Length: 100
Image (cartoon, one colour):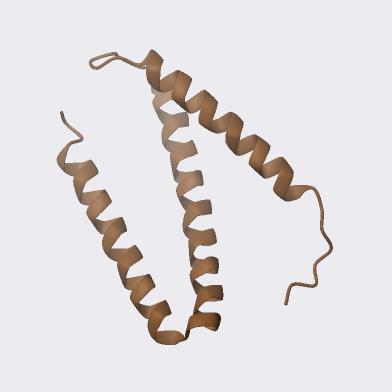
């Protein structure tokens, strides 16, 4: 059970995530193949991506752990294996197509 008092953090986070998504899509549309970006721009994009990946991984892990309590440890183990495999596949694809 969750005995934490409700606060406005979730609503704020969702509003900020919506803004991040809008900004990301706008910037994505501004960048054309072959464009040269300032180093600080590339760095900021990389840093933002790293931060969002960290948040996603933490929240996905917490959700999988909570689901394991409800469905049992075997289901949790299979879910964790799937997440690891998916992550590795995504990294491999990014590296494979990075130079294109």
